[in-house]
Image (tube, rainbow, N blue to C red; front, side, top):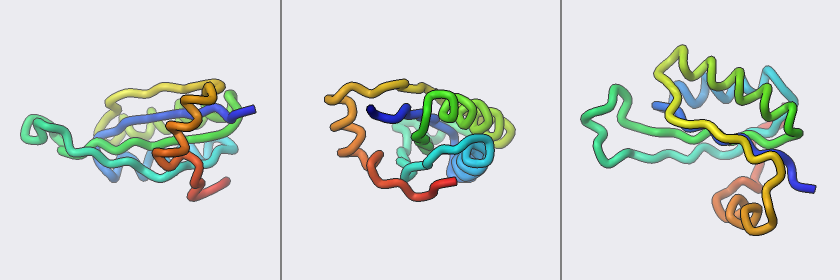
Length: 108
């Protein structure tokens, strides 16, 4: 069965590292590669870079990691969006694999 996936979009690379650290310390999760995107209107944002932090693990672990990561990111520059996929479907799993979700970088 597929592990749960937590996806957290934050403003800036510093917030991403702070969120990643907090999430990994809060729960037994694997963190994936960051995805970085420069929005089309960067001059209107305080931090002109959006970074996606991705966690994998059990549903409970991902929920705990996401809560801690969101709080940590909000203390730096803020959160754009967050979502947890409890059990990715096969087709979703394929897309997660294409985007690098299958390549863990750090395991707690």
